[in-house]
Image (tube, rainbow over all chains, first blue to last red; front, side, top):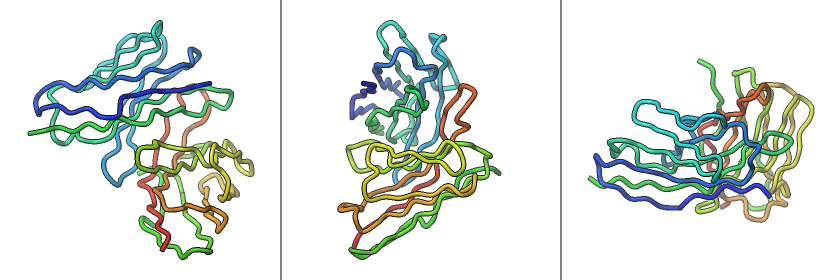
Length: 111
Length: 114
């Protein structure tokens, strides 16, 4: 069945780059998404990539998509303490186009 | 500004009571969703609705009920049949058609059984 996997934790130093990885199973996905959740809050759409793209850059965020390996990554340049949050990867899949979610990667940024 | 509003932010329920969580959106989105979030378990889909007066069960619908009488509103009732209702509940909406299915989320309701 459809599945999205992410590592659960990542710790980086302030100013370094963070790379959060995600693998998915549904090759028919049209869009893949990255969401950010701060403590006690809802999820905020960070960025998304259309499946016929390899890369998308938006300020400090770079998304890389390897469709052959079904691998998606989110790179955050110059990571700040305000980037500490849980990051969710999601793909659209299935007949009803529901999003399939990873469990989220908790990013800790150390001063 | 358009957005999606959940209320209340915090809710306390006694065992055996039903409670209703509110979700309202003014984004003119067709589809709406309810998720439950527990620590370490990510998002689990409770119910979703792609159009007014229609909704489908998600992965963990038992003990919950919904209605979709208006496009803007998708309330969730947590019934006494839900054995472990303490959780963070998130409502979301999406255009639900024409390609991009990205969701807009509300700020969540934290439900605690006391």
